[in-house]
Image (tube, rainbow, N blue to C red; front, side):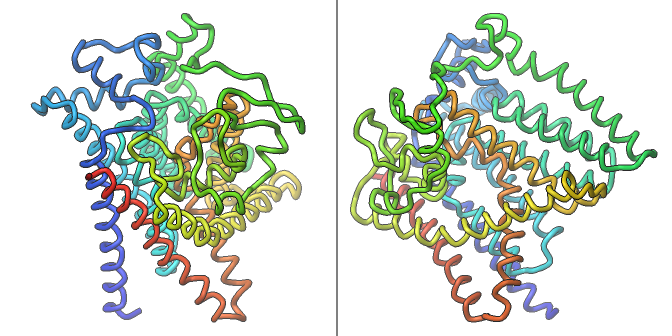
Length: 462
């Protein structure tokens, strides 16, 4: 391939990366709010010199790694104004977000030889409004997304090489994720499940024994560290559950009959998990935080996740981020229409993964290559999809339908898109004009994504 062409492609990657960096930094500099008051935990650690317990503040139930790191940085950097301290906390998350993008870029460079597909995948993640938004808030989400991306990437590398250095990296970052946020625990079960499945797929021999050792060591190290340093043991002793949070559990929903909680989210199994209300979303391109007055799509989990993932304005929260100007609403509508294309391509990839998994359990295929060729990403993705379903079943309030809870699976989302796009290209090979038209959706969507974040930056700057 022409070297000049490759250089042009590299320039495009750098261009997108710089836009992604600029949007994150600028939003972090003008923003002063997060979805929840996480900064309060940081202040307790910094000002009082203690690790707070669950009862000390609203967000004190979380594990404390992000808060400890930020409090330490604020001790080292002489920043007195609280507004500037918040900016520092947010810039730390910007750095975590940029590192996550670097991991995704590294993976794409190794895994995807098709430069166009590599560029499309990277751009959609780098400019995703929700990812940018969470990187510009003082919360623990950016850290757990970073650690999860490292765990998943290193698991993929381990399956390719069986090199023990990747195992130690997996173990380290799984522990760090577990002491950052409770949804980091999903990584433990997904990684352990991968080891177990690999043992099952390998025939008797040294590699099977190696993965058995990996599994035993992984469980041992995690068990000796995370329950204590993540305060899970402390919460179990004080509250009878290691997962004590600041809101009560609700009765499980019925299959069809609708029942309502404080701010209705999940109303019934059928209504919330088997619906996608696109028409209502286009009509009302935002959600509501009121008890009684809300758009119909608020009770549909998948519509909620779709809306939250594609717009910084959809949540109408934090309060300073909420706006209902006609321009912003129309921008949201345009995003939700153009984002349908990558969403459908992602679903194609997801269905293909289910078909591949069926080869193991139905056709009895026993090749460990199935994992390294992509099935490993399905394991982590489904781990987080089951997590959000389980969470919203017991916390039925609409606030539990947060897409950031499944953003630790960003890398598997990218893989599903790549897999789906390749199938889409094969199907549309006879109609290159159709592929060309569909490809136009992606740069338009990236421009709309950037406009969404820019509008928020301008809004917060006033």
